[in-house]
Image (cartoon, rainbow, N blue to C red; front, side):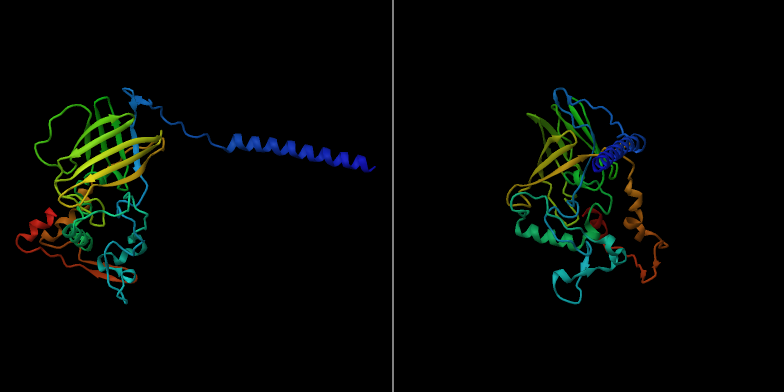
Length: 325
């Protein structure tokens, strides 16, 4: 009797396992949507790695290249206590709350993590940070420059041929061409510089020169002069990850060359494309609202605060200098 009972229980367990397996397979087949097919891409172009695709950085470098703790805002003022960690958001960004805060970061500057400014240049960098709203070219929708365009929180698209590589950036609808053949230099310095590439094995090396001095590296006020010289290195870590490294030289601002490094990730959405971000029109009121005869933006009323705005025109040549910073 006991043996029959044990055999009966074993048969029940086997039957239950078989039914469970059938149900699992059925659920997997009916509810598990197949992964979207990715478009096929040739692995190489002219025998070299193919970087074509849409890419984006996933880090906090656009806030500050260097390691930093989280901050309550990009622009702060003294709080109750006279310590840096006790500063509070300044009036222009107070209403943004946590959305206006700066995320912390381990930084992307290699070596000791420090940008080797000359003493007088470091003072300018700190002044830039204190006047972020007035000076950051990003807020004015100026072209972002290199390398900043590579790690802003916007995607960019690489289109590769055998002798040219075109890079289109979503921010401000800007672009640059990396020349793999011999070309003449530009007639003048440029926001995005002049890019000339070569191959070292499977690594794309790009020398970028002929910059103007009007772009920043991040929102922390890190900057350069018109003597900036970049050496970029693009290396595929996998079909969907690029190791992006940049050696930065500028004898007018830094005591020695220094380097940043980060991965860039392929955007994998099947319908991914660059969308328009023509921020010129978004920045129009910020840039030129003080020139209106009748001020448009005067007052904002919220549940916990009201904000009155008085626009002003910088006196004399300061008006023109503001646009040149």
